[in-house]
Image (cartoon, rainbow, N blue to C red; front, side, top):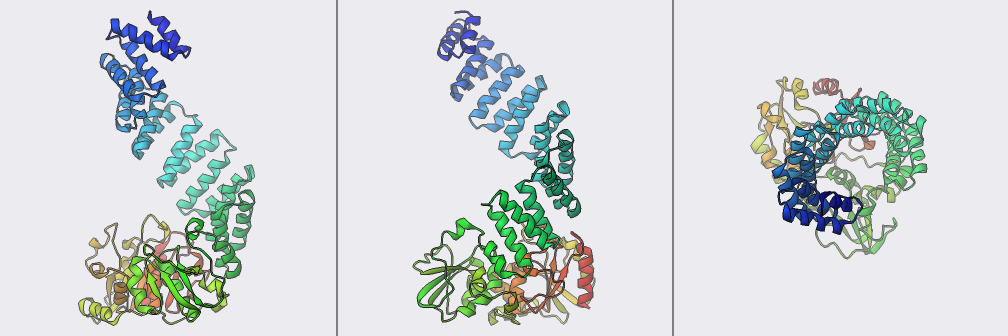
Length: 529
């Protein structure tokens, strides 16, 4: 059997005949690298990656040319050995700089999660093929995913230059402008996308942006247009709900907002009908964060006597505090067996079920208490000073609600005050900022749960904090709190600028421009006077 006939079998799809022909040749010429390579390719076509590797490794050992290296890399890729695949594509590129090898190497690095290497190969492709629209879009998307928004915008502009009707790129460019806080350009991008095509993504994103700009009516209009295109979108329904809630329209707001987290909510049977059932058990669950439970537990007292038993599910960190404050409820963790029960209710919807609108928000001086022994413990250990005792909380999880976090350095002007002692209430300073400020007393070693934190807060003259769980804890305890809010603050703070009906002890300090915390801190400094 000669080589040409064997290749012909392969090309015409007669795989078994090709394999037999290649095997016959190799029996006579075991070091024929061209046939070893083709045999490897044949086994790849058959889905036999192990056999393919055997032949391709021999071929590359005899002749490490670019095509053979690429085939060997593909065999490794088929075995999910992305590191060796990438290594061989890199070797192939040293021999011959091809778009195909760059594309395949990029796919390997994507599997390995190596952002820099993926970008390196995409940029090489872009240099070789500047009008390769798929490559341009991938680079833009990669920068966007990694929050390098300015670079992403540069490549979205290139995409639009190549395809002027690229409404997807216009929409994504808008998201990037939002990422850098340029809401005006973001709005222009979304509107440009919609001029090309009425699409769900641009309507939804524009609706969310209008809420950030506090134009709630325009927000609702855009989001309803989004729902016309994609009626099943939970995201748009929840966003409409937040816009109504921002307008203090609790009735319409919760009709939409209560549709969030459908999979989680489906775990709980028989939603409560809002009526008294003195011989039944009510299970109160949650789908929000610690702050949501602390904020809406104010309504629990209104359910006293309505049920034979109320079971309340909470986060582990809230277990001690809630058991101390609600001795008549059965406080449980979601991991415990909370069955049986008759009705279920989300804690954030108690007031909605009770028909309590914005005008009837219970405005207590405080509705939670800290255990006296914990108050005394923190007093003796940390707070023996005649200075004003100021608590600080400047960042939560930096990956969540990034616009809420404040660099500790921005608060430096406050530290120049000789009349105040400052205390960190942070749990896990992930950016390790506090090490640069030895004058701040770190309470973290003794903050094991919210009950401990409550004991510490009750020793403060004031807490300065971003919008996070500890803010709601301070409000529930009646601790004087300076709440620092981004320009696009959450719905529950409405459009008010200084006070909130949720917590009489709060003073609100909202950004006047997106991202400008410096001006906010100046106002806080004056307030401390």
